[in-house]
Length: 111
Length: 115
Image (cartoon, rainbow over all chains, first blue to last red; front, side, top):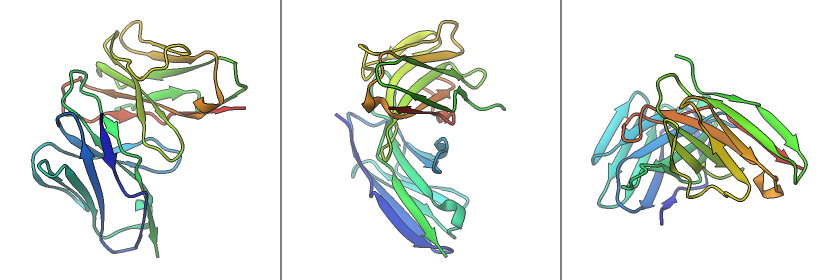
């Protein structure tokens, strides 16, 4: 089966840096996605990693270590609008090429 | 480009009634997904279509849930009869293709409440 773990909740201060971790155990590996989901809204794509290392995109960066089954999402210069749930999703190496989502990390940014 | 369209936005029904949701994916996206997201959890895949064929429906409760994508574009998801545990947001997503590294794009979902 597939198992994806993320912290349930995190709180951080406006202007600070926060790291949201994700560990996974899946049947093979074919990529990891991070999505942002504001309350009552659709998940929106943030980043994609398939090779080890850091992918940077503006204030958001995502890191992957395939040997450790580990990823993190790094948010810099936090803004109040970053308060949302952050979903880690893994694509196992199966024929259907589906995504399996973690339960998400609810981030609250405080002034 | 227009995003994934879903309707209705909200639906309230009593248990044992039936309900249907509609999804129109992004133009040109061959792959369409239906997810169930229970409050406080991540989305769980119910069914995946590639054009008008089913690729994966292993997690679809087939005794009560059905879905179709007859012309390879729009899709409908039906629940009949509904149970209390079906209360959730039903998300539709689309992507260029099954093996594409392009991300899945989600609609705003239908929030279903069962009384």
